[in-house]
Structures are given as C-alpha cells and as structure tokens.
Length: 316
Image (cartoon, rainbow, N blue to C red; front, top):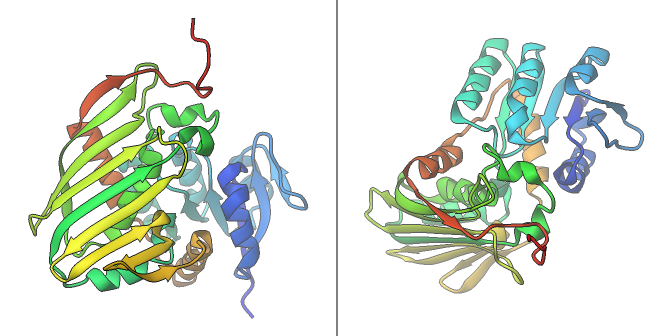
C-alpha cells in the first residue's frame, strides 16, 4: 500500500475550513500533518506561524496547499518548490500571470508537481456540459454571476486591494467553467468595470467576448446582489440550449434536468492533485486569469458609489 502524501496546509481561514480540510480528510491519499497560520490552528495537527517555519521543522512534508490571498502566495510557493515540495494553489493561482508562469517553470526545473486549481471545473455539471457542447455550433453565450459580497467575504479587505481581483474573485469561477466547456477559443473585445470610489478593485463588470463562431458572448458579474444568488451560464447552439446553474451543480438541456447534485468540487481537486503527484505532472491553465487580465487592460473603468462592509454605516 502506498504511503499517504504528507500535506502541509498554509492558511487556515474560511475556505480551508469549509472545503480543503474536509476534502483532505475524505481522501486516503493525503495526511494533513501540519498547518501554517498566524492565528488559527487545526486540532491534532502541528501548527507553525509561517510556511518557512513549517518546512524547516518538518522536512518530511511532501506537498503544500496554499490557501492564503494571492498577493502573498508567490514567495511561499516558490520556496516550497525549491525545497522539492509539490504545490497546490487555491484560485486564483496568483496576483499576476507572470508570477504563475515563473512557478510553472520552477516546478518543471525542480521535477515536482504544481496544480493551479479551478474548483468550479469540478462541479458535477461541468464535464457533462463540455461533452454535450463538443462539436456543436455556438449561437450565444450569456454568463450571469451575481452574489452578495457581504455574505461571502465579510471584512476581507485584501480582496479589494490590487491583486485581490474584486468581483473577479467569483467571476473567475465562471470564466474557469466557460473556458472548460466551450468548444472554441474566446477573447475579450470590450467591457466596463465598476470601481467603488473608495476601493481599488471592481464591484461589478460587464464583459463582451468574441470567438470563431461569431456567437454573441457576454458576461455580467456583480457583487451587489442580495437575496437569491445567481451563478448561471446559458449557451445557445444549433442543436438546442444549455443552462449550467448553481455554479455548475445543475445542468439543463432544452429545459430538461440532466444533472442536479450536491457539490463535491474540492474532493475532485484533491483526487486530481494525488494523480499529478503520482505521475510527476503539473496542471497550470492560465486561461481564466488571462481573461481577467484582459478585462483590466481593455475594460473601461467606471467610478460608482463607495462600498462599506456595513451597508448602513455612517460615513459622515
């Protein structure tokens, strides 16, 4: 029997507790042996203040999963790779395209695996959607990804800073699905990014894309939606219409339900990471991040009302 991969987890915040730790616990290919966090810990697991301290004290660690904000991730990932550790990157894989490309080169040089994860691609409806769309002619693509930032990211100021992506933090999930399921290449042709006057990252974005088919492709991302949340991708083709909803958990073809399952995205991520480590391969697809970079380059920047975590906050 193959020994489990000894894993060090860096960052013990909401995404780690909600998703990574449960999925690691369900996968016998991994053993969580250490964490690195300034203030949080996991019962029964060795804790260190920094990833460097963790790797100094426990050189037997085989792999590292990084769940810290993208702005600080590159140096941590590069250090782990240079030490010969396999590395998993929470999405987005980095603050810039260039730093992730550097990590990919470093992983290849060191002969270890680098996995830039896109968790939404592991939603249960994504693979069936890709299979159904293969070979079909696109007529239209419409993405609606609208949610309440106060619910999903309360008090997380880093997400409003350069490199934090703003509304593209969830929007990149949609882009990761679209680039996975569409049978043709797409590129940005224009858009508008709405920046609160007191923030350095957008709260909404309206994007337009083109592809080889000439189909109309549009995406609307908004962090100001309250009540029911919207994570939908509509694709019209010459052979019918597809709706991928609930972030990819539900799939309809011509109004008929095809997939309706609870999400298990991070179980899929760790299953794939185990495969990469076993084979010595890497998976670093930068297409979703490239589209975000294009939006910042080509999109028109608009200034909108200020945003505060507390909607009734007195700003006088």
